[in-house]
Length: 547
Image 1: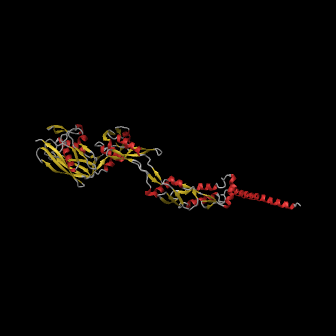
Image 2: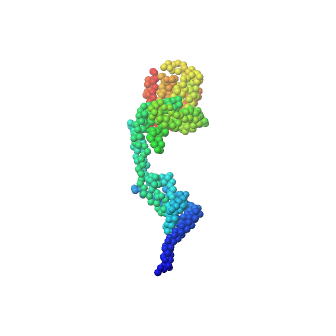
Image 3: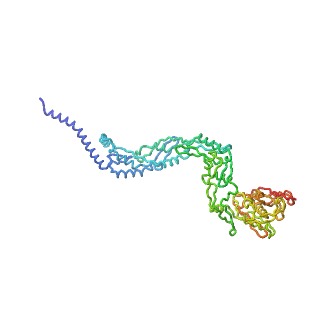
């Protein structure tokens, strides 16, 4: 017989089998809904672990506080870099690595909120039995990383060497470039993990060192060198203010260099010159007399000579002069105007104060009868020249400085010897000043590149050791062969003229031979010059007296 109770039992089992999963799902959904409500209330999903730290259920403020604390703990983390032939160990902090607090917070906060909607309950269920791990985001300070990598590599790191130019016997020659090997910032940054999985655990990086190449090629630099040699084969005229001078362009080659120009994206070799080397070269070739551009003179104050300001003056050269020369040469120009700068009168005084004009280094006195017209001329030229500075390397010319002797300049008629004949002319007698200056320079050890003795011996002058003047052909020139300034300081009485040369001791002169020592004909006088370092040299000076 049919048993209704049996059907009821089967029905109940079936209902239970069907209902159990539904009840479980309902429970899960209900529990998930509770957690969703918690998320909407502003907390982190349950069972979330950030770099090994449980942050599930934290409010956003609590999460940020936790991440900030982790960021403070992170700098001592050991970082080990294996680059094959180089093994380096440092710390995260020293390498410029840190925990990015903002990025890490956002990573955690997104859990459960940004999951695809159909998967959210499933992922939530998984979180009940296993935590959801999140890596802390890493920040990189590229500058600090580069600096520390360079220090860690030390001599194992070789920088690329750009090809350059060297001055050879026949001109500039190529010095080839060389590649370098280094651990690059980009390589280390690329090898870093996506984030910190476990705070305090060492970070191991496998990196390959890179071969770094020069920015310029040998061929490109050789092309510039070829051009530089081609444009420095002739003389070039350089103009500075109102003066000009010629110089062999090849003399600029030692000052030349090939540097990296263009842009970082497109580097190109360019020719330049070392400003100091160019400055020294220009100073050595500027026309004589240009060493005192502001016209500084000296005057006596107490027992010392002090500089007196002159005037502002254009001088060679402004800082862009070397590049102006390069540009002119490369453009094929053989006549280049150099930019000047203004040297103030005050700068001139400062410069003169550093020239070592301290004491008398050469002195001589000659005598003459008082009251004659020639004495007036001696005093006039002495007053005109008093305080004149001969800068280091400069040459003082009496004729160039004084010019033609005229009444307007204070000179009177007095006896002269012209072409071996006795006559009268304005400025007669100034040869006595010239003779006195010649002897001061003779004993002061200065160079005397131009002088001429009288054609007949005059007893008031030293035999064979004197000088005459005749404008414009017969001159007396004194060259300052010392590194110091030399100042001419004359003084006189009614019957004598004295010339002192003030400077810093550099050399002294002495007459060491003379042949013949009296009479007429050609007279040769030998001077031995002794320098402060003890070495000596000798010069010969000539006179020719008619018999």
